[in-house]
Amino acid sequence: MKTTASRPSDLVSTALALDQEFGRFERLADELDRLDVETENGLAQAAKVLGHFSDAGEKIGVNIEALAETLGQARARAEKAAERVAVRAERVRQRREESDRIHERFRLLGEMVHKVSSALGDLQRARKDGRFTDQEFKSIAGSLPEIGTNLSVLAEEARKVEAEAQAANLKSLVKEADSMAQSLVSAKSKLQVFSDGAASLVAGH
Image (cartoon, rainbow, N blue to C red; front, top):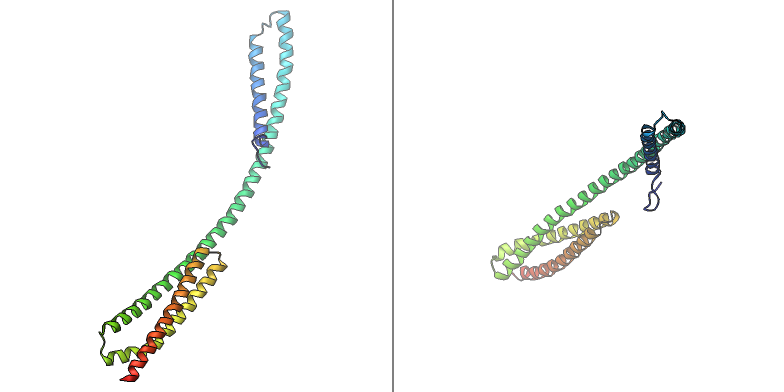
């Protein structure tokens, strides 16, 4: 049962009712102490108080039983809530592991992409600066198709990571993987232009 600001829970209501009966019980005891039972009027008043005292005692017993029952219900609700929390906690753990796995795969892929991209950038700068002999350039030109294949494989892997992230509802990673895949496709296109130029130079020698 839900607790609202205007209506206390059964547990609170029962506890308050018991507390009120305890308070009444103590007030009756105090009243009985003050009465002079040696007088006729005091004796009559004491008899009435004792009647109320007996009634209060019975109500305390009833309220104690009600509180025990309410506590049992509250404990049952708490146990059910704990079971729900345990189920959700397990799901949180699974999601965390899934997220960590996909992010780690993306991180490793990023390292591979960085290495290939750096190598390609160095190659382009070196050629532009004329740091290769014709023989060296011919050797490098022969490896360009393999680099292109690697870029294609990496782009495909990026798309797989993107698909996994999409299935796992990892939106930020979906964007990052998509951006990586597009960058790899662009890098392959640039490599193709460079490769075509290299092939022409090699053919001319």
